[in-house]
Image 1 (cartoon, rainbow, N blue to C red):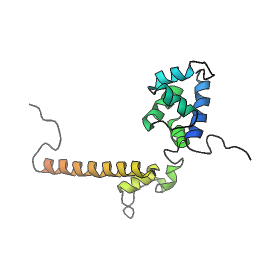
Image 2 (cartoon, rainbow, N blue to C red):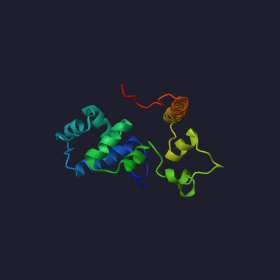
Image 3 (cartoon, one colour):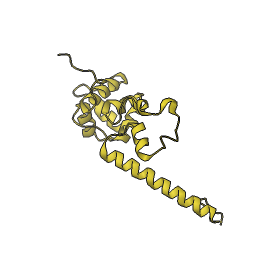
Image 4 (tube, rainbow, N blue to C red):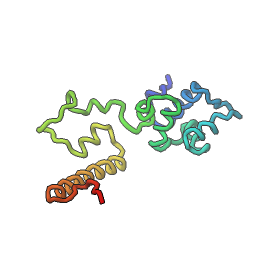
Length: 157
C-alpha cells in the first residue's frame, strides 16, 4: 500500500513531513546534531521542543505559528494550514457562485464560518461569537452616532 504524501493526509504527521522538507530546502540542517531545529526555533519564536515535536509529526503548532512558519520558510500559508487540517483545502466550494451575496441567502456568522472552512467546534464558536459581538457593537455605535453621540469616533479634547 502506497503511503500518502503530505498534501493527501492533513494533520500533525503531514505537517511535520512538509515543514521538514521546506526547512531543509530553506537551508536548515535538521540532521542529528545539526543546529537547524534550534535555528528554526529562534526564527519562529517556538520552543525547541515544540519544533521537534512538530517535525516528528507528534503535535500541531498553534495557528499563529503556522503563519510564522510560512513567512520564515517562504511557503504558502494556505497550503500549510490545509496540510495541518486547520481549514479545508477548498473553502470556495462552499461559497455562493461568483462570491455574490444573495437576499435569498443572507450573510450569517455560521455562513461566514462555512465559507472559511471553519469546522472545529471551539474555533467555530469563537468566530461566530466574535462576529455577533462585533455586529452588536457596530449597531450600538451607529445608534450613538444617530443620537448625536460620537459613534465610536475619537473626539478631540
